[in-house]
Image (cartoon, rainbow, N blue to C red; front, side):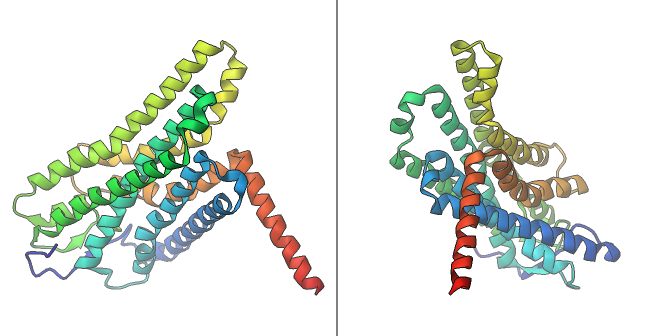
Amino acid sequence: MLNQTSVTAFLLLGVTDIQALQPYLFVVFLAIYMVSVVGNGAVLLVVVSDPRLHLPMYFFLGNLSCLDICYSTVTLPKMLENFFSTHKAISFLGCISQLHFFHFLGSTEAMLLAVMAFDRFVAICRPLHYSVIMNYQLCTRMAVTVWTIGFFHALLHSMMTSRLNFCGSHQIHHFFCDVKPLLELACGNTELNRWLLNTVTGTIAMGPFFLTLLSYFSIIISLFSKTHSCSALHKALSTCASHFMVVIVFYAPVVFTYISLASGSSMQDQVAAIMYTVVTPMLNPLVYTLRNKDVKAALSRVFRRRDDLSKFRAHF
């Protein structure tokens, strides 16, 4: 992964160059980052600590929370630092590492959402066989598989990008290192890199999306064939509502960014990137805790135990 040029650093120009806005943006993004870490950390804590949540659905939810903590940490700390930095520099190795983990975690989350949709399909359409099909071994294998595929998909991009020659300006018109902005700075032939981005990344992103839609389509068809009651249908689909909201929030900006015909970095690309790297990891725990009775009950039990422990310590 050695670069063929003498480039040692890039400059991340960030979200805006208006100095007056940067302190306010720092406060906003810091608050979002704290909510994301605390919210996902709380969900991860209750999923691990509460035996009542040791079920496939919550096993995958714990994986999602872990992913979101790491995902926001890949880009946000450097963005926050650059709000008060005069140089806004990131080393070549740091840039490639950020690119790697961004694609690693992003592609893993896309595939994990498809796995979670499959879990809902089995739970609703094969309820009598659910515990047999979604056993511990299968859940573990699926989780390991999506993490592994995500890692090697990102490794492909990081290796191919690191071998490019960079000439001219080293200013990246973005708030983090991604393939598209770096390809704009590369000299020489980048057709293979663009093909990998459009084809491989497009498949990794859109393949799970269509599998997710297929799972929900199968759920609806199965429910209609079993019951013609709208209330029963609504009750069954309500168990999928949180996951479906997360899918929409995650994929809307991803589709906009990577399926868009426009190449290079634009303000629209940055807004979309902020949505799926900053906003989505913050919204995921809120969606699941606000709509999921089991998670809310588990959080209440955790806080109740902490209050009881604090009272016990204060008594002595």
